[in-house]
Length: 258
Image 1 (tube, rainbow, N blue to C red):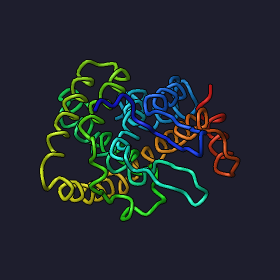
Image 2 (image 1 turned 30 degrees about the horizontal axis):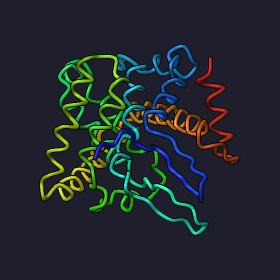
Image 3 (image 1 turned 180 degrees about the horizontal axis):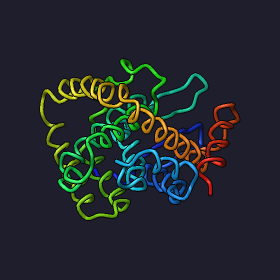
Image 4 (image 1 turned 135 degrees about the vertical axis):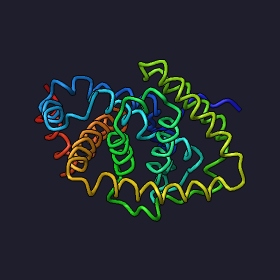
């Protein structure tokens, strides 16, 4: 079975379907931060963080990878009490972080020129873009998460590789997903992945959270991601009036919009 799209949002009630592909969502997010280095928040980040060699690329990687873990949830259909069918992506941030980790480990260019602290900040930002929720519950993986996963990973590769500007990044992304396909076939994959997730949480706590400089940068980048993520989501999913949305809009107009 050939699968051509990965959903980042899916909701259906009767004949009415509201959906968004991951490719569409990433494209909208990237458009929101395209001039980040000329924004107030971008100039501030560059001033306080000399070890950050490329702010734009750092945020692009965060955005490209932040929802890649949703590839594991394309069969995770649920029925609400109101009667609509939806895809639940609870826990996808752990798998997104793992996919980024696989990408980084295959990317010799990034490993040779980027500081370890920046890589840990990228993991931190991806991992905690749903940080207020129960991490122990959210990182559970079930057998249904692995259905059609090879086809889904192939689609993930073809849908997102266009967003990488460097050939080495595109190749590393493809290789990382191919390697992940091999891992999924192993009988102890779920156990190994859960063990990695526990260690990943420890690492970002040890390397980022207790380091005041890295923690500050991580939280700023997290705010930028949350803003781009939520504003981009409104384009196809619609707006939901809330205090949180107002805060996101204010952050965007004051700090990101030129």
